[in-house]
Length: 104
Image (cartoon, rainbow, N blue to C red; front, side, top):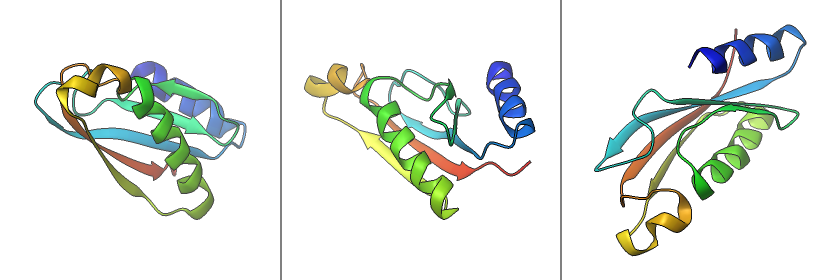
């Protein structure tokens, strides 16, 4: 998480708007635990991780919306075991990710 915070500090110091995504819940197995963070700035730069595969792509898309609207969003990802590897949830787990605009 230290790397994420260092990047966020760098981005905000140069005036970038930043969205912060945080894993707030996990059911069964998931690649990243609750508290894992990913930061996305308005230039499309990314620091950290909340999962992997398609999940992070979806989080980036929502982060862009959050940066434009200022409205936070709660995302839920869950998938059947047979399709889990394709989207980055290798154990068929479920995760909830909170995406909000970072305000220093």
